[in-house]
Amino acid sequence: MPEIVELLASSRHRFEGRPADGPAPAPDGELTREIHVRAGLGIVGDRYFNHPAHKDASVTVIARESLPPGAGLTRVRRNILVAGIAVDALVGSVLSLDSGDGPVLLRVRRPANPCAWMDVTIGPGAWRALRGKGGIRCVPLNDGVLRIGPVTASVLPEGSAR
Image: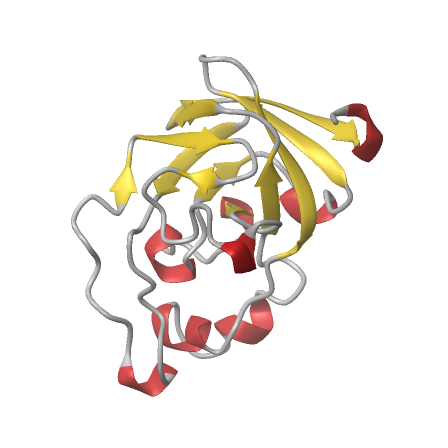
């Protein structure tokens, strides 16, 4: 059964400057047991919430199966880590995730391409290894709550959720 493994809502962008300098320290509460999603705005408390440059990419999702053992959201800077969902193939569709409080609909806009930071936070070669499986960038279509644990996931064609 698919599950939500980790959730991240970070108030600060930690990967700034040169990767060789390393990331900034994590703010308290960055990893959380639940997130509140707002339609068209993103995740409440996240650095990209209602950020104009990220309107079409305010929520990011990555599959645990894409990451090496032990790597999680703090290393890849995505918001939602799922297991059992092949998210990288979903560009152009709508991903529905329901962890018990009703479905949260995410329009999948584009891939979340990895960057050189991955070689620093995960290990040498990670940037190359994550090409094509770095996750997805989404815009939320409705308000809702997502929690860690089992999740009902379904994929809808692009035009089915407006």
